[in-house]
Length: 135
Image 1: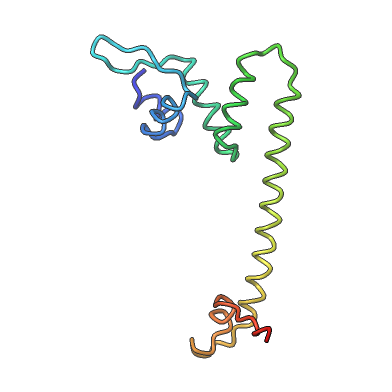
Image 2 (image 1 turned 30 degrees about the vertical axis):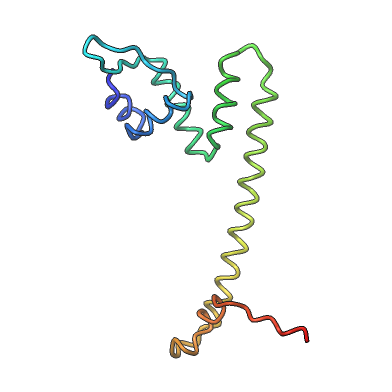
């Protein structure tokens, strides 16, 4: 299949497919007589794996590590578990950070008195915090 077909089948931008080839996540395909890229089922499966991992928020380095592990299917999956567990910890940290941001925004918005911008508590909260002079 051509690059556009591969991209379409995996909901991936053509430039992203080329980028994944460039950085070695996706092996270079064979070329046709007309010098077009010719992708096979293995490319489709690998790109689908990459896309799903990226959709779940795995970094490119983590995807590279996971792909290396999938290339040796006899290895124990402990390394895969470790990668996924580290990522889950990061996701949970981000969720916690987002929840704290949400709570702070609710407080800031709750302080709004619907007056003028000059008296706006939201603008005041977002502005620089002036520290008292220690003198």
